[in-house]
Length: 586
Image (tube, rainbow, N blue to C red; front, side, top):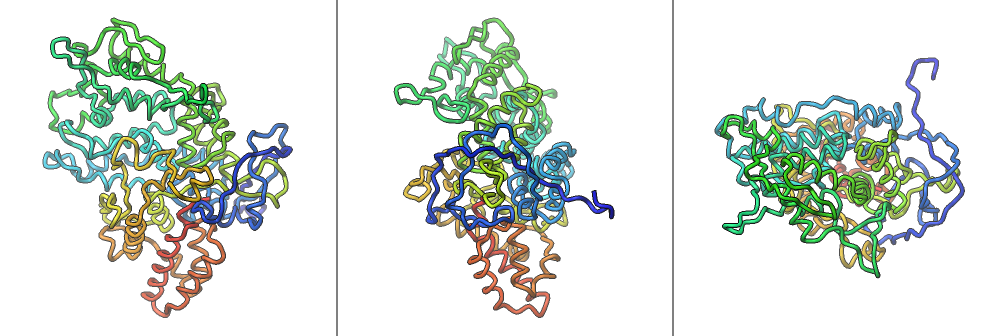
């Protein structure tokens, strides 16, 4: 510790061992995923020829301290949060990655979305059949809440355990509260146990409305009516085990060259019997207030299928309560070996990279299967392991030489529009002075972001985790790029126009106000101005050619008045937010 009392800069560590081989394939510069810049402040000129990360974790490792640079801290925050700011960069440098994660996980939650709606009077009867207020309470959390890690993981989970506010039908109204509570539920449990989360999702009014098992009733021999199978199918396909059996590294298990399916139609039918008899817990027998959306579903025995139910080779015995049948069913799914690689890989993709190596997935699966205390399903431990993994931090475990401190050229992910927007908002402390957060539904791809919180067009999210953009260098390299599924000509132009108007603050149609005071002091110097934006928005990853072009462009603009300086800032921000190096986070 320094004698003058100044905080000591934290150091990161890498583990080193003998080199191991990898079959990873580098992709050409034609691919959008090849856009990369600095790597934690070290030279990447030999990126294409550098050794890729190993397939297995090292043994008998030694620790090598590495100072956390501003660029490294910013990049970490772009994976672990909703964006980087000068304040959070300094915290990461001071605390170190692991301690920063611990501090974030221990941070108390800010005002819930539900409670914010109540403070705004949205529980008045006039709003019963309205979505008013939902978009505001969702954006407020993403942009302003200090628990940025919790918000990032909550957002990731909302794209795995998908509902959409537009799909909350036959629910007695109060859609804004139903959707707000669902996000509050994900937020409250995002560092908890996966099994507990599965229970709470399965008994939430929002999920029961979206996947239509609210009021689901047992087989009626008189009418031939069968239990609704919607949730039983998606619970297995999307929320737990997936379509095909997996090894712990995420690779597909095959038999005679054909993937082995996890379940069949009879498994869906069997599990659907468990989701009968569940309905709203209407304490006052009405829906005059939204409060019932905050209570778990209630079991009504007269509607529940009491016969035996079989799925995945297991049998739920006859004659037990609906509550016990649900518990046993979720236990069966939780114990399935697919859950760790299926959920773990998707969380890696949401936070760090679209194409994690099998070794990365296997390391995360191992943490899911047993945390430091042998507990299965600890999501907090999984998130921390994902963010601290050598592949996440850009470390090369094959050598202790800092000259080979590189990124895997296949690594990285496209930042989806919500994350791009929030990166700008967080970097410059955007706020709503009147606390109304009038951003609205940004789903329109032609005029806005083409994406908006909890407004996915289907249960399959805005994009599929295995999407391969056809006829691209990405496809030719055998890679995937999930977020490319929502990229088209309209969305590219719509995003830039929306961001340009929002940056200006006078044309955006919302009430966001960014703090550009730090940039105003740099506006006279194109190099310093663009350099600051490069750090806060792109973690220093803009290449020299891109930097030079933006500097030259804004260098032609006057800067003698405050208004002229602001115009320089607006122009530079728009150009930085349009760069491949910003859109693709390496």
